[in-house]
Length: 283
Image 1 (tube, rainbow, N blue to C red):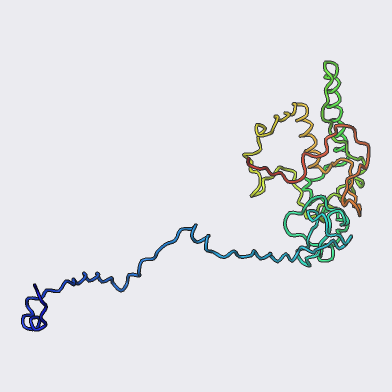
Image 2 (tube, rainbow, N blue to C red; image 1 turned 60 degrees about the vertical axis):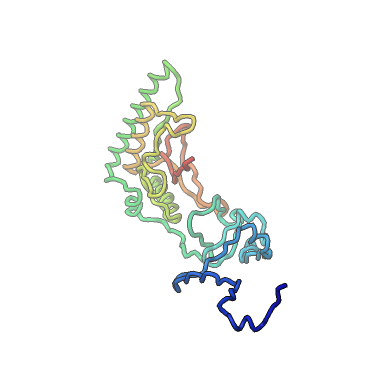
């Protein structure tokens, strides 16, 4: 039977073997490296996150009302002045604003726009880029000759087939009356900040010249006949001589600038090639 003797442990220590083993020392990481991070999935983050109440945005224009009628409804028709931040309905303004202005807009009180007075004859001729005036007798004879030429051509064609064609404009005979008509148009365009151009221009950032093709028009585009093209060129030549259609531009306090006839105008009479800006959307 084996017995345990304490003196034997001290007497022969070399015969005792310990059962403990020392673990391998970990490799030292350079001081520049940061400890690895344990990344969590987005599902774990969302599961433990505390919901945050969305703060309502401060709408400083939510209580804007029209200065004329006092109503805040129809906010899609409410214009805000870029200077005083006051609101005005488009139909409450005088004259009425028919469309949302492009660019900055100022109300009547903040606008320093002064009413345009009557322009001098020199400024009117410069505004419309009218060429050197022809003698009055020569102009009347030229207009009568062009009119007779058109009537003679029209009579011969109506026998074969009746067609609706453009008619050349017939200007007023009185030169002072024509000057007054051009004065009203030049004053209105100057007040609205619109430049006059007798040629088709292409503004940077809008439809380029390459987009002006009939194949892009939905359903096609009607092509002018040879007679209508001659009428167009005839009217353009008359414009360059200062012979305008019998029209006057009148300022209406409700509707703004309106165009009224200042003499008899027949149906399908050529008035203007086009007025305004043209742009397109790429779809």
